Image (tube, rainbow, N blue to C red; front, side):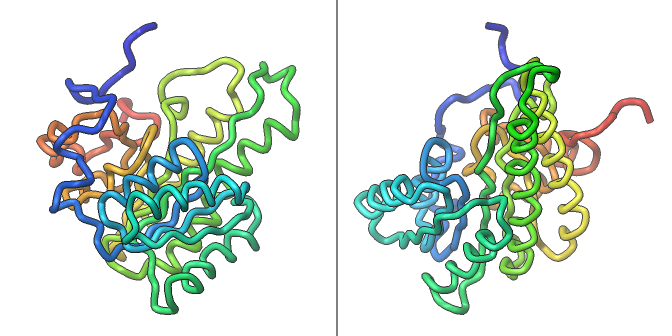
Length: 264
């Protein structure tokens, strides 16, 4: 297998000291987080990492209540100071998404505001060429990967009243790194979502909110030094110290953005 592309010289596959959630300066004490797709895989790992960093409140949203309950039980055992609430629902359903935000205040109090939202729920259609793809299955990728992003971002803007609150879209290399046969729905929808995140940063960045695309996990982007990454597309494998060393270059131009670059 060919080596994956990398923006930094060092390519990480596990946690390292600079991004460890146990670092005091990365503490999330008192913070409230909403994570979609929180019942398994990356979403569950993100929830555990936020709890390890001291998050006060975490709301997990997903379709399968049993899986959410398993993550809740696990966090209660390993990090009992973190309160975990659950909301079972479909991220493509406006009523379900609105209910998730209502569940925040119901679980954690009427004055609760969001510090971070991790849009992790995603959909990968059955691998087929375009001529053989099932229409509903193919379009489902856009429903989950793009429509839900809009619904979640709308709720985030209304509930994240603190400067510095961050919205993280869990993305994929398929959105920008070449063409992947038999995954046109997934790759196309993830590319669309990445551009939506950039536009949201342009719209709301002046209000102190941050919007970031991240592949394949997201927890390390919510750090005090990450202001220069707002509106950018980053891989969490990339070395954070190298990124920080290049922050002026990254922040001042089109580095790490999605578009037809290099011609004007």
